[in-house]
Image (cartoon, rainbow, N blue to C red; front, side, top):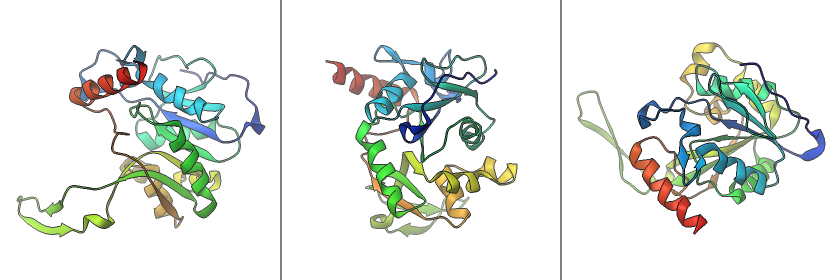
Length: 226
């Protein structure tokens, strides 16, 4: 799929990279995850609406093969891994700060984009995250517990994640094996020596991965529309 370009205003502020290239295999859906209907809309449309409500005018979407970019967005083919998709989207984006969001988090609120971008005044990267409330234990391959971690210092990381553009570009400029092993782009910024700041979010901003997650998201988003 060739990139799909729409006119953009480089002075409009930050750019959003929406990662929507996942297959959704664990959902057992007949279409890629970002296009699974949720409360009457394709899943990615909920994130697009939140981005636009936050005043972010330029949106680049990393898409699965054969998919068409949503109206008003730039579409690029997604990569084999999440961070490859982010890198491809970044190459098609205009200048300015960057906010990366997973289309699989359709319950994101517009104000969360605003808060992570504002936090870039104090860091190279700012990440939405929820406080861990469960006790977290570490176990070996044999199932025996080797440590119990202090949950007061632990955060469950989400998206959106905001970046100073130069910090994200440097973080993504790594060997393919490093890129493939990254579970989020903030960890690549950490690896390159950049500063990362946590912005507190809610567990309600969860990632849709399983059929159960999809059912919960459907109920909560339908309630918003009621």
